[in-house]
Image 1 (tube, rainbow, N blue to C red):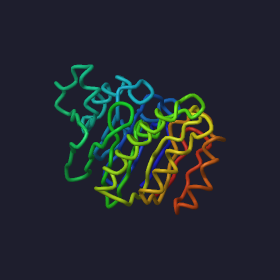
Image 2: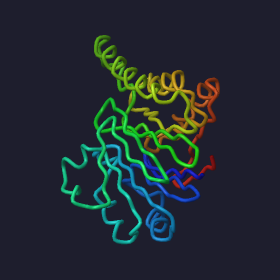
Image 3: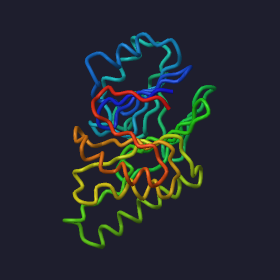
Image 4: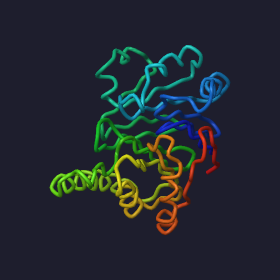
Length: 237
């Protein structure tokens, strides 16, 4: 498989029989995703974990006009805001629900913000896109009580994922420098609890230098770490 970094939490996964676009709102380069969708001959899946504008844009709903073999898998909070449930090729998922066909399986897990995270099973691999699931706290300004509540919520959601799988071939997970000095703590807690073969940072904007700081911890946890340098970068996995 191939994984291409678009921007923020946006990615494209290409398998032998399918292509999947995740949390698209900004292209890696002009026309990159549109060209892929137009030319790809296999099944095309478009996933969005929640409605936040850095994870979702209504633009994706226009792609069905150029790719008839497309399936949208959207977190339920997106559908609450629009009328897209009338589209025959849209599946909406609450936490705990799943979409499955003969090519992929996508199960919705929880978030510590809004929407969902997704566990994807395809071509013998287990892939996790965290959406906005993270240990969201700002230790410089949050009270100890607020931090404790956030930690408890985060660990509860990770534990639910661990009930289904304690091993992932690849995980896309937030490493967001805006959180201040402890911005890597959620990622550390995640890889400590879920064995992750390949760790892919996301939700960092264009702060490539800051995500590189997580490399040593990821390697110690047994992960291959992907330190993105530019939009449009691709890895094989």
